Length: 186
Image 1 (cartoon, helix red, strand yellow):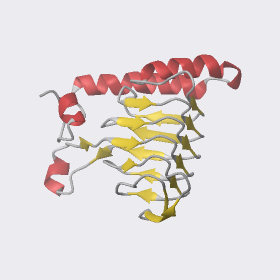
Image 2 (spheres, one colour; image 1 turned 60 degrees about the vertical axis):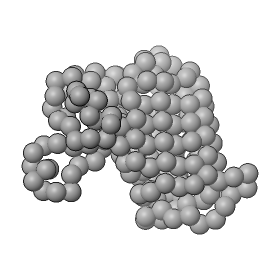
Image 3 (spheres, helix red, strand yellow; image 1 turned 90 degrees about the vertical axis):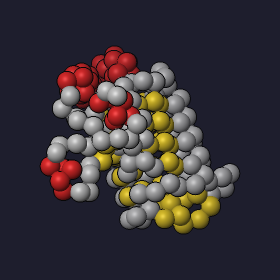
């Protein structure tokens, strides 16, 4: 397996392998251009940023600044909106459904590192996929950890740290995030 294949399979991989370094550099260039574009050039800048992603319809809106590792492992649904300061570490697939909204400063961390200190010293890391289903609202300053799925129609309260799956149709909040109650239409 290549290091890219290992990463996407959730296995330990070498992040300094040249293909991955090149992909991160290409993403950094695209993200830099987007983040530096004046407001009058937003339409052109967001169109170029969308080209970086695996899937990103024209209806997506992302406010600068935005940051990601690779971009090419991000799939965005229709009418996705990310407010200022979004970070997506896409070391695993990040799949975001239709009509998903992120408040300011939402971070998705698909990257993870070994708990064992010897493995960390070896310089390996791994990636885990994140899935956010349709019609989810994620409040500002929320962190979503590797391997998490957030179910359709759910709401994540501001400042939460989501460490495990959240079922469809609920309000969840806290550190770590816990289900508080069902929401209408769930």
